[in-house]
Amino acid sequence: MGVSLPVEVIDLLAARIASNIRELEGGLNRLIAYSQLQSRKVDEAFAEEVLAEMFRASRRRITIDEIQRRVSEHYRIRQAEMVSARRAREVARPRQVAMYLAKQLTPRSLPEIGRKFGGRDHTTVIHAIRQIERLRGIDTDIDTDVRTLMRDLEG
Image 1 (tube, rainbow, N blue to C red):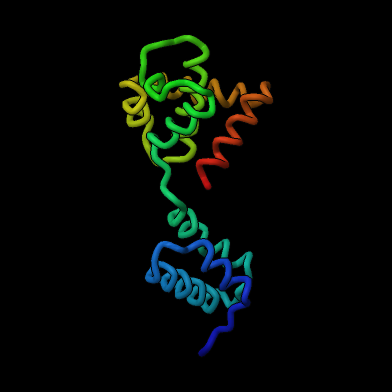
Image 2: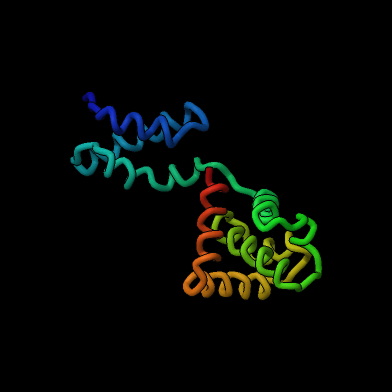
């Protein structure tokens, strides 16, 4: 039994699963199977729902090193400051932003993130995340910086 897919769905699959043909074929098979099991018409919303996890997994992997480099460039500080012991605000705030982004954009644990920032404890990472979350709500500059960096890193 044939299944017809709208061009929009085919375009969505091609755009979101670009890593290899096996993943693309797997996504297509999954979409057709779920459509038949649930007796639902395949449209963009259905494809987004069924393949959400697959779409997330095929997104480009972002590394903590890349986050540190981009944040350093954005705030015009040396990348070495990300792992230094310096606590001056002009260094500490960008470091906190980088820790926040590391938690948001990578699957790394708090201890792993802390290690990548000069061997800091996971509680330091928690403090950084909470601090940036709080500041985003009250400081439009920080919020704009975080949004800009996220957009740059996610491509």
